[in-house]
Amino acid sequence: MLDVDRDVFEAVATRHWPGADKVLPKLSRAANHGVLWFAVAGAIAASRTPRARRAALRGVGSLALASATINTVGKWSVRRARPVLDVVPLMRRLEKQPHTTSFPSGHSASAAAFAAGVALESPGWGAVVAPLAGAVALSRVYTGVHYPSDVLAGAALGVGAACTARALVPTRDQGKPPARPRAEAPALTHGAGLIMVVNNASGSSDRALAVRDALPLAKVVQCEPEAVEEELERAASLAEVLGVCGGDGTVNTAARIALRHDLPLAVLPGGTLNHFAYDLGVEDVRALARALERGDAVKVDVGMFSTERQSGIFLNTCSLGIYPELVREREVWAGRIGGWPAGLVAAVRVLRADRHPLVAHFQGRTHPLWLLFAGNGTYHRLGVMSGRRMDLADGQLDVRVVHGGRRPALRLLSAALAGPLTRSPAHAAVQVPHLRIDRVSSGTLLAYDGEVTPVEGAVTLRKLPLALTVYRPLT
Image 1 (cartoon, one colour):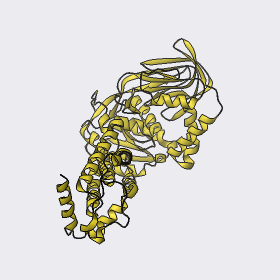
Image 2 (cartoon, helix red, strand yellow):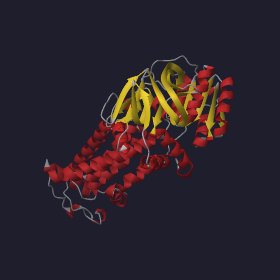
Image 3 (cartoon, rainbow, N blue to C red):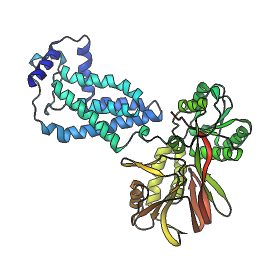
Image 4 (cartoon, rainbow, N blue to C red):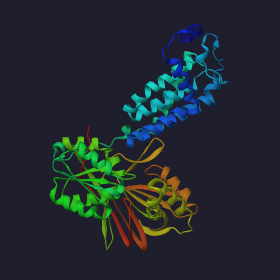
């Protein structure tokens, strides 16, 4: 076997490869320390689609896992010397020869891990990256720093690392929500009958152009945040299907109006988080256009909160305690530094502030709480991650409670990492169809789908089962 390995190595070294002398050594150097793959990941993420961003992140994560495995285990398990360079032309050799053992090839492992990670999340981007990964792997033999078996072993370890990463953090395609219950909804040829209201504050102008391209007969209305509700009301009185493009708060407003007018809703993600659209399975205008053209739609539950003075709906979550304060603080910073950085700043400021837990009465007892969270549907754990709903029509509120006590940040983190139906001294989780919280003090903030409102007295949370018809791709 070793003789075959050396024979193949020498065959590659002695064969003339037109143009390769200028390309492959540079490509091999560019892949040092993963620099090439970080650059490729940045280029993929720059396409600004959710799938591309996830593919870039998964590729980098798989690469990191492969590198850690190679450097801590692989290089020390087989102490193989590097190939002798006598048969390798001088112009092909790397300026700086590696000093670690030859087996397995770390560059090949990183290349294969990155390409496989990208492909598992996005086959299209994977097909683009695969030839580059193959060229890097070939370059390690071509420049004389590895035997072919080193490269093959490294590539196998890289693919294994990507598959391991997928087991720990499943791809979104592994957790598609069930296509039930099916709903009757009109099939709109080229979008005829759809009025799509676009919230310009969500940075959705490019999506408005995409809607016009994908659904040329749809009417697209762009407006500022203060006019969104008015435009949605006007659209609901004229449209066969009400469409909305914006963040979760904008989608909440559209859902409330669609319910009142008994209209199906078409949701296009256009905000920072877009929890409802993504959990529904709609990530871009192509997916939504496909569902509209085919009339693919489902019924989903809607959550509802009510007090003596007010009521509202929520498609994602409703919460009392620290989270509403975090939402309010995030809004203060979002206009200055952007949505994601604002969320981090808000979390630090809220958790560092000297405050007392909320005191509320429910299930027959008075509880000090840092957080009471109710999700519209159960948030399931996927691998080591938690935070996606696999069923938007399960009839349940996913209630998570973080008990009052010392170190709220640690308690909140442990609750976030815990799965549903868990219980500990710091937190608890149950699934119920409704919940009543009594004796809520005046001025307490309630957050729902990114919006915040003050509440007091008795707060009732319940489900409106299968209340809303929404379009989503079913194939």
